[in-house]
Length: 560
Image 1 (cartoon, helix red, strand yellow):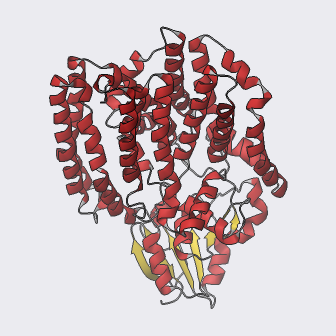
Image 2: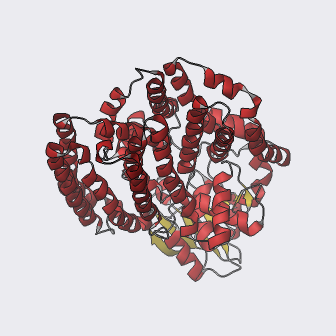
Image 3: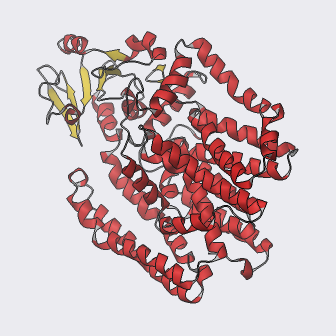
């Protein structure tokens, strides 16, 4: 990609400015579109932060006006600050994630420099910039990129501490990054960097860093940053400590969380999604990992152990978790970017590079010939008629780039990855348009628009939650109204929520009683989630259909 023989290290720093400028455009352009999605939980994080700002309650997050302690608060706080500065909007909600992706590009540079040299750092930043999973994830509203940046920052600080154990700023950075990781995603924010460091120390065969991190000066600021919120939450809300430590972590890992509000995916699905997120660098990672195996002098063993241990810690932890979801592998992406960056710096050789480029050409051809018919045949995307053509256009662009990569592999192998990197950045507007086309099938915004048009201020709004009541967050965000949630069948509340159930839920008996009363009620439901094809039998008669969008219906007990 970028080669040390091209210019002195100062040129690498100059090229980094270009990479970061492109990254700022790639991650920041069009953040106001599309509307917030229900899956992933864009709307949940956006809505909790909105209620935090509007209520002024920053220590006890709320959803639908009721206590919501399922997640640590850092993502809510950052989105809330963004709302304070820019106003409540999709752009403001997405901004912290986009900035996290940009910071990670810079951290790839810094880690590459610390572990190898400026050119590896530049390559790693460029690989990160051109990774499909990052280009998409930067537009989602969830804390995974924030966690990933915190883990990368902690490992960078530890690399500096290995070289200079008394470095004051490295000690501070280590603790701030670790605190951010914990407040972003919970205890997993400690396990991931911890696992990487264990492998690195064992691979390097020297334990000076262990002694450095065992000293209280490596933990006092961390405690100062994370303890207060946890203590306040525990004192304010009975049951929080058990739910946070046992339910949200241990039982969730074992896929026994109460309530069981998500379904883990199969192991093969988890790894396949990880491979897709790594695109187009997926084919290079196995060889990069082999070439990075710890050997040689201490610095090389440390670098190989840290990067391989980083990826292994993420993938092993979540492979073992029955509750694994596809995006849990995101914190392993920077480790893979560093591997591939080092691989391109050291060179593959023409024959080996050509062998790795051929699958990329095949992928591009598949995007042109195979993916469009699959999209056209998907019933739930029937209304998104432009998606097949978008896929075909993306396939043409990527195939051309892969062919150019093949041509360069024969004459200038160190520059061969450039066309693919450019193509991935060029595909961003196409990707954004595709997300916009699919959003109506995965967002509550269209339903909320109907509600806002027909419901008066005094009308009652009811949401039938199929499994997790937080799936109604999109309706809450776009209507800015208080909703009554029809209690999911078999729902067992976490201990902290038990005293507040009356503020959130109504049961079916109460719904039926009020349905025949004088108040006008609008109910949103997905009958397919209950194994039915229509709303018949879900609510009492009489029933008027107000709207039917996707799988969800809006019905009322009175004629609109």
